[in-house]
Length: 265
Image (tube, rainbow, N blue to C red; front, side, top):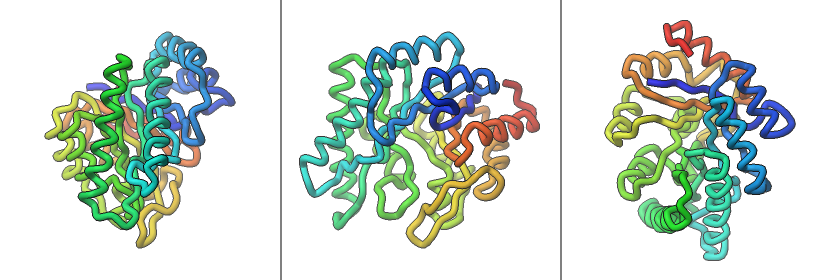
């Protein structure tokens, strides 16, 4: 069992500086944010990877926000796949395993049609990954808005049918369900996937009838300590990335909670 905690994005001006800062803070992971576009070269990705390996910081990647694998425009689907693959390529060179992304919007399509479109694209992406021998796994994220594809059960089904990864965003699940979350039920479902380690996001969040509204600092809802207790009780290995407005500070809050419950980093 291993718990790793860290921020979404660098706490410093650059990714390289951020890795060193994360280590000094006593954290163990960092998610590299390509949310505004993949602007890192492969050469820089290699340097980032060497630094992370040297300091034992686990890296993951969050792909661009401009992704919709169920667009009405075929060109936009292909552009979305390219953005994910560009993220995968950089992730490979920096030694990041999970390549996280928000997969699609329902639009006017029914859920099953959108599911099949996402599945087709994810299989295409995985074929390219295999062809290029990139050591990464595309990991669709559970999403927080009801207009987005990415309910927990949808992503779990995709994992079972394609072998892709999953990023479990507990705040998104909470917001999508309008303030309801059952950690035991979620972890029960995830346990059936047989994965050795979970990749997760956590923050507090506000929501409306349409779901996710705004990520908040870790001092409200959903509560983190019950999740930490359940993870420790089940002896689950997990990487938990903070997506709050002050990511590294809240990663340290999560660390203190785990330590209070008896875990030693």
